[in-house]
Structures are given as C-alpha cells and as structure tokens.
Image 1: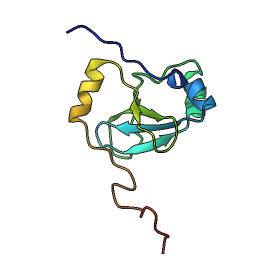
Image 2: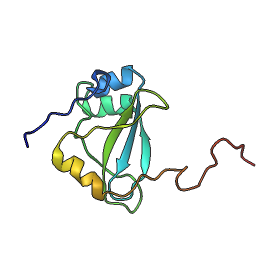
Image 3: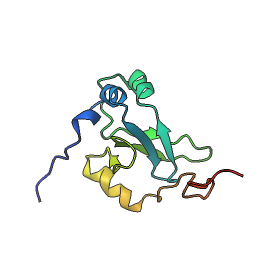
Length: 116
C-alpha cells in the first residue's frame, strides 16, 4: 500500500491561523486520556505563529502522568474533532491509547442541569 498524505483544513495549518479563526483546540493524553482546552494564541507565542500543530506532541500536564499529548481541532462547537496526526506510527498508537476523559465523561459535572 502506498503512503497517503493526510489533508488538514486550511484554517488549521498553523497555530497563528487557528488563533485568528477562533477555532477550538484540545489536547488529549495518550496515557491518561485527559482532554484539556488549549489556547491557540498561547501556542502561537510558544512555538511561533507559522508552526504547524500537525504531528506536534507535548508532555501531559496532569500531576502524576508521564504521558504524551496530541492536539485536536474543531471549527466550532458541534463539529467533529480532527486529530492533528498525519504520521502512520502516531495514528496507529491511538488504537492502544487511553479513552478520552473529561469532566463530563468522569461525571464531575452535570450537562444541562443547574448546580444545586
């Protein structure tokens, strides 16, 4: 089978474009599964506005976890999240990664109900 280049949306080509388009960005740890919001403008300052989030990995910031996070983007709420991974070895690793975990999936917050 030949190598196939993955195509990512133009608005997600760099941290600067993600920041300007007000796109949503999350990180997800392969080890613990925790998802966290990511500020694209901070990432643009950190890595440079022209730097690409594709295949960019970072250390998990959860206390006690030594995993690696990858980035996901969505144009707006209600849209599918796009894993910003193009390399086959990184994408294949997702099959054995921890399932996504966040405040809703961990039942820490109630969706659509007032706090009480």
